[in-house]
Length: 138
Image (cartoon, rainbow, N blue to C red):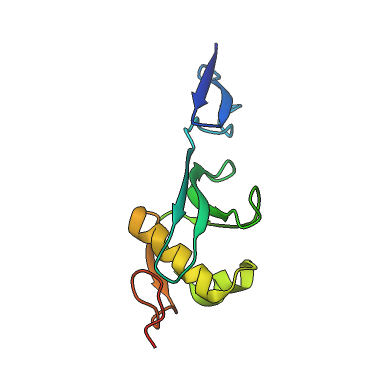
């Protein structure tokens, strides 16, 4: 017997089929049904800038590990995206290499996500010269 599961969020819909009665365990590697979380918000951290962001949490379809991502909509409808395992620390050297966002903007975005969704980032490492809002202390 096959079970059909439909999950919905604000803009995403996914359908997952699983075979619950298969004695040979075929189909056990199919994705686990999840409900992705997507939030659109604007951050104004006090450095005379404004960041329009999409933040999402979803389950990796290959390993079943929750991941977080943000997209800075600096082009209006598109922009840079960064993805990391949920609850992991983020190292400045790694994230600066992976995204085409300057360090000042990047730290303000990451600090706002860490403050708004504390379970998504355990620690920001290598950004010690910035305060909890992402503003330079120098």
